[in-house]
Length: 198
Image (cartoon, one colour):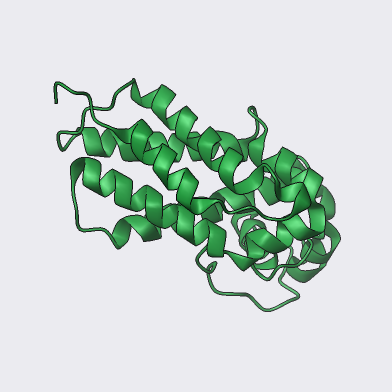
């Protein structure tokens, strides 16, 4: 994924906000380090209880940081694309897949916390999975505005694509980060095929 916003000096005052905490968590994640709520609280000069109140748990904070970086990665892939409609949708999703596979921080997370990482990223009611579905659905709807007619409704297609990413990129992560890009792109292309009456 692309790099997070600029880093901040340690020892910030207690007025640090949830956004400051989220940025610090994203920096930690992108550095390939284990997220330590105590360390972030000390760095920002904010009570650990406040972080838990804002994000619910360590997983809640980590999930929010991963969502932030996923959204930034998709936005970056989108900025690189000049096509429109279904071609743009396909290019953005393909670029996003490559960026995820090449992301050292994501690989380090799975190396360090494989089972927990798989659960956090793929859990159906979890924020990472839900954000992935919402992000892909937004891309599909943008393509529809330029003439793309998906083979099924956009919500179902987005869900299927998000689950596809999880299956091909993360599902074997307990045995090592998979990154099965070629087969993933083949299946993704088949799913994206426009309605025949388009």
